[in-house]
Amino acid sequence: MSERRTTPNTASGAPEARPLVLSLRPRFAEAILDGSKTVELRRTRLQAPAGTRLVLYAASPVMAVVGVATLEAVESASPNQIWRRHRLAVGLERREFDAYFADAQRATALIISSPQRLAEPPDLATMRAETGFRPPQSYRYLTPVDPQVLHLVAAS
Image (cartoon, rainbow, N blue to C red; front, side, top):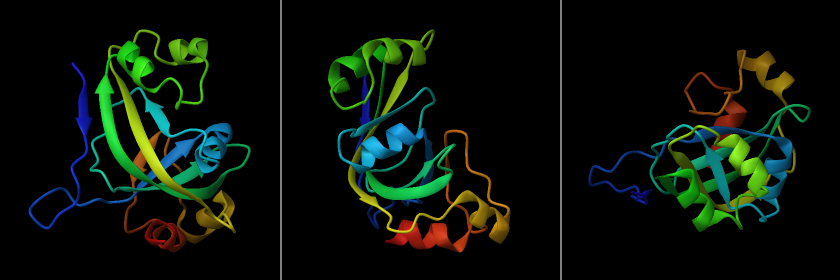
């Protein structure tokens, strides 16, 4: 059975959309920013409401926050169901997809929209100097102790 979460943020008790810092391989960050990749995959389940702001961190060798986007929905289903629905939007060949989800019972698809490239990407060295920032392995919510530049990026 597939689950799709598209709950909008409202004042009526829906969860607040705290920004997420999403770590990506540089090739996937670039594909999201150029619009050719609209679905990001994760082996772990993510629960965030539609409208959540995504801060896109490109891992090594880039090591910088390269853009922002909006989370439209989160789907959780078997890897085969996710592949059938989103294969044209994931930016992977089938063999890469199968290798990533080997032995996984569930796959999570983050449906992404409205990517925006940053003109001046804040790099990891600068953010570490400011607050000791450590990028997440996969994703995490933005916290009050994160560098101010991340909060400004998320609000843009």
